[in-house]
Image: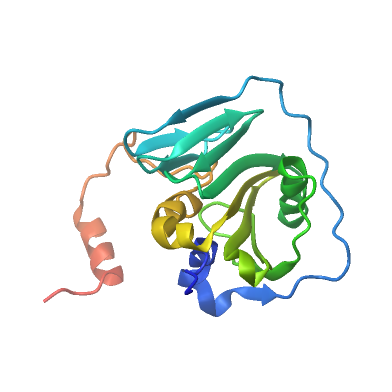
Length: 217
């Protein structure tokens, strides 16, 4: 069976030349300390159309039609229409994305013990301060794909945990990538000129533009 490449690794496709990939450390990673999530009843629904959504701290992303969404204890669980692929979105406080990723697994699955197969630290971009993504080693007979992605802005880590069958990844990988790659830091403000008064285009300014801009025949 051909197993589709994990969409997490698409994150490095534009920066492959400068991405640092390191083998997992043999030293146990200290765990981040997260505040207890607020007590709340789980809420689940199925999306009838592609739907823009937001995390607890207003990070925007879009989920494809037909996916199931469960909101519980400040976390979001996204499942593909066949419910064979799961994306868990949560936020973990701390100044280390690596420790936050380990803490996210601890919070969602205390018995998680898969070894890291590959760990990548792509250059931070799109307003993030740090990015780490791990793929985990699973028994071949399971034909399963497991990965984790943590992106830090300040002292908040936005984590996505992925777990599903290889067949589901083949079917739904592009839809999963839409969530994995669609995040942008809410603190990345786009500059707007809507409230600014334009300067008059004088002869002096035209001459300045001619000096710095290439001539178009």
